[in-house]
Image 1 (cartoon, one colour):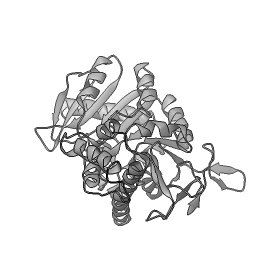
Image 2 (cartoon, rainbow, N blue to C red):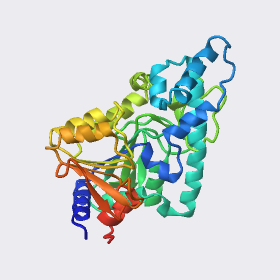
Image 3 (cartoon, rainbow, N blue to C red):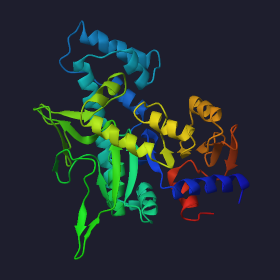
Amino acid sequence: MNNMRKIAIEDGQKCLRESPVIVLGSGASIPAGLPSMKKLADHLKGSTPDGILPNTDQNLWDKFINKLVIEGKDLESALQEIQLNRKLSDHVIEQTWNLVSKADTCAFEKVLGNVTHLPLVRLYRHLFDSTGETVSVVTTNYDRLAEYAADHAGFCHYTGFSYGYLRKRQQPRSRLYFKRERDNKAARTVNIWKVHGCLDWFIDQDDQVIAITSARTILDGWQPAIVTPGINKYESAFREPFRSIITGADEALASANAYLCIGFSFNDKHIQPKLLDRWKQGKAFLVILTRTLKENVKEMLKKENNQEFVALEQLEQSGNGTRMWSNKYPEGVSIEGVSLWNLSTFLKHTIEGGA
């Protein structure tokens, strides 16, 4: 085995032995068919807000679209530079929900036909192959891939709401228990902290948040409880259920011995402060799997190269190769012939003994 490949695999195994907090960014869902931020931006470009005023709303919307089309800004930057009003912000939320919900439904149908479609299933089962009763997932994604994987793996999942079709908010310490003759046994549970909301969550006509498992459309007078990119997403952190969810995520991140970041771009203030603070103190091992590692992330990692980390990205020169960055190799080294940056391949080599 190539020596660099061996080092990458051993570092990955070290991370998994520590029962890491799993951090999922949008890049973790794209392989399952969920839209990227670019696809969302393209979708918004082609949408027309209903009932907008010609001289005010339309001008503001045109400025926003020009940021995307003419200036080539990414969606996050455009929404930070152009402060949309309530009507236009609601349009962005609705269009985002429609696009992601459709893709999520397609992904679910694929999962029904092929459990191996979601590598998270294998990861959950491996992490629960111990005495641990919980696995923590922190994610910015609206989709339900993490929940589908928990169901397929045979574990419960908790997202801040009760079970059923009409789900009310539930305290973070709530757990399901299986009744046995002698005692109650806590169900093994994947805690999924969705800091930007979920496709299930809606704000009803009484301004209460409820989760509807089977929702396929947005009910009249209701609004998806999801936080879209831009300045407003940080304001939403002070509202429920986001405040409680972020608190739960913070607690998980603050007590972790390792982090496994999958498709996470490190540009979200809801997640990275606690994560990076603990890592920089030398209290947690950091593993990053991503198609492309951003330059600012590389610089941040190199600056703190006295702390343990390994970042694996796609090798540009090869469709089947990996570029590894670590505290041992801060300038990066190439690993030919294996895509360790891909979660499925990573698991094949770290937990399944792939050659």
